[in-house]
Image 1 (cartoon, rainbow, N blue to C red):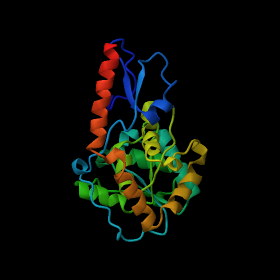
Image 2: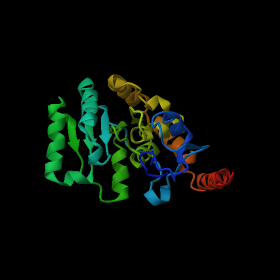
Image 3: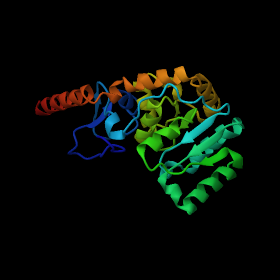
Length: 257
């Protein structure tokens, strides 16, 4: 279940528990695995109090005229393939910049490797803007307020970072694969009815990035996105856990049969 990046293939495991969107995506991706138990709702939920999510500020300063892309996922997710995707977007939108942060970038060797990889992929030096690692939750969420768009990682996508961005009114662009780890953001977006943020083909990422930057440029559009996400089942810490507990009872009854 939660946090497990695939089936166990163990005979003693009765089910692999997934939300409906993920279950649909992975129905034939893992032949020979234990059966999938498809939940009627979300498989987990985001506790705003635990994450110290601030209230959405409708009076934030206007975004810059040039697109600001963000990448706040852990640096171990920033693979060569991820960097290639980022570079394609930045090359197609020369006025855009990429702001990125991760606690691993405190190590100069890691930071240098990532910067060199971006430059080698054809990104202009002025487009690379490393941010200091946020020492508090308030600082971390403040960084999202400057972004037009958060770029998802690949082949392991974001989870908490994806929800952080969406809750702050920042669209997330993802291009999933057929495996669980690469489809988490896509499943979350489908549950939120935000499938327009899912890009099915890698070569279409630059065009989709431009579209999302424009669609969510205005404060009222970002406020509507934040409100929609925060009011969803993914953020309902009362109903969603009760529904999950009810499903466990159904599983137990099914096993006894």
